[in-house]
Length: 138
Image (cartoon, rainbow, N blue to C red; front, side, top):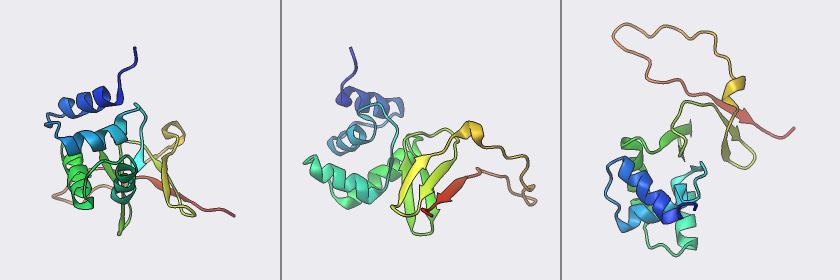
């Protein structure tokens, strides 16, 4: 028998040691309830919560997304200086950013080849390499 969206959300939160508050559970169900990965903005998740009649404020959505990132449940993907997406797939992988409609989707990781990157300056280390491939209609 397939787990319910509530069970998926509870397991997801519990695996990170987060207490399943009502707001966290509501947002977790929207993020991982069906077992599929998604890319959301705080605003799009807030709108989904409103449509689902979950009582959460936009500030709570932002705070909850940050808390989920801090414990490794989500990966924040910065598309530009003003737009963050949150990805439920936390493994390293490239993204397509569809400029015409502002969507972020996974790009095929097995097709990406990075042969070298510059050495980090003295006293620092490379924390991560983000690959965002911007697409637009021609």
